[in-house]
Image (cartoon, rainbow, N blue to C red; front, side, top):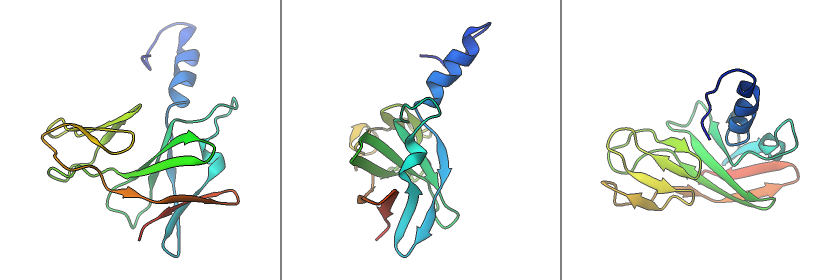
Length: 134
């Protein structure tokens, strides 16, 4: 689905795009980057497929995919080929520099990159999603 439209469809299309992703700022507590689990919920009760989490101490953001209420994967958005920041397109990440593509688990699907993305362990404590930066 495109995120552009005309006439009365604009609001509907933009709402559809909003359910895919969202950018949020995380908080670092001890060795964890944390965000509220509720950040994944949209205003209409659906869930974002992923969040892009930023923090000023991180050189690159972390993309967190939500697979279920208890299953999340956190991927460092740095291309292992030459270090460019990745872009997220639904269930894949792509390098704007040379076109490498990775799936929502961080596995290389198209080169020139030949190394999977760095991943981080994710856990849930009460209403907080904890991304271990160790």
